[in-house]
Length: 208
Ligand SMILES: [Zn+2]
Ligand SMILES: [Zn+2]
Image (cartoon, rainbow, N blue to C red; front, top):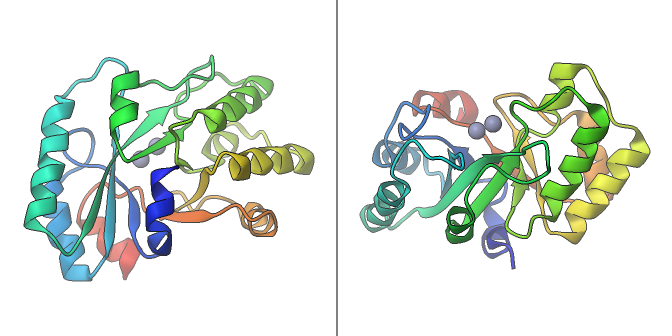
């Protein structure tokens, strides 16, 4: 079972996409928890950037999360990663890392400007048994000017439903498109709130 199922009631009230100063975020795990507590946010998922070759100590990141769970018992705190899809459809993360976090999500960052390859790799990523969500869905299309046909999108959403993968509603990039959200609703693909928060200051913007 995908981890998000256990916290389904918080899909739209939690903050499911947060970065820390382990990568390009500005605050520590603890500073972010502090702010979430002040704002009454019930759940935080720390979806840190990863690569197959990590530039930081992942165990330290996990132990911060463990300590934060003790310090902030009123918050549900999930460990996670945001992994980039590679041009072979695999994710840029080591197996032992993706296996041990609660909430792995995938995204397209740098990727070849090749529409067919994108669609093929997107499907592979959805079928990855660990992934919980598709982060900032459609950002690659926006950046390249490509689009998906309704048939293609239906096929993708069908796969997401089958594999229990969430569609992230990403505040940072205002994605996905409204038409995608309508189709997702019709097809019963669940959505999850992700601010792609890189600092506590952004909570004000994303959470009012
Ligand atoms: Zn991203
Ligand atoms: Zn992110």
